[in-house]
Image (cartoon, rainbow, N blue to C red; front, side):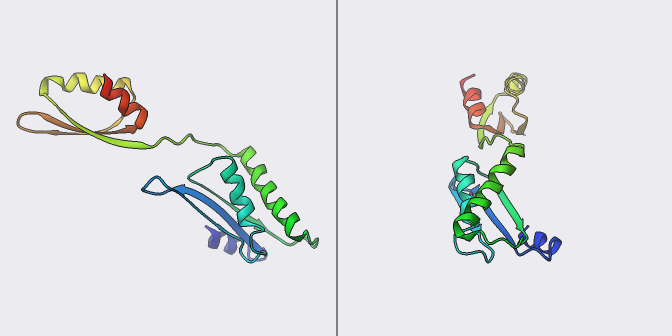
Length: 152
């Protein structure tokens, strides 16, 4: 994305970024780039805003053109942080829910009942394997929905 923005804005002085995401081990991974700005004056302040808002699975990129006024390192850090705060007021957020997989088996006579329970909880991701003696299910849903399903 940074390369694309640099190509779209060839006269820009800097394209900085900050990002946070969950890896496959549910650990928050963070990264940032100052893209030539003084160390810690651009990407880190942007990243600190994302941390403060407890945002994950997101990134922010800022294209900067030098406007002729030198802000100093403190002023630059505040300007980048303010830019991120401003864009977050306009952003549409989607609540993140971790999805988990649950496997179980039922008799053939319980298939309709199981489908009804899945529909009640709005669990739409499932697969079935019709074996000789039973049906083996694999369902995917939020941890909360899967726990509710197990209790039904």
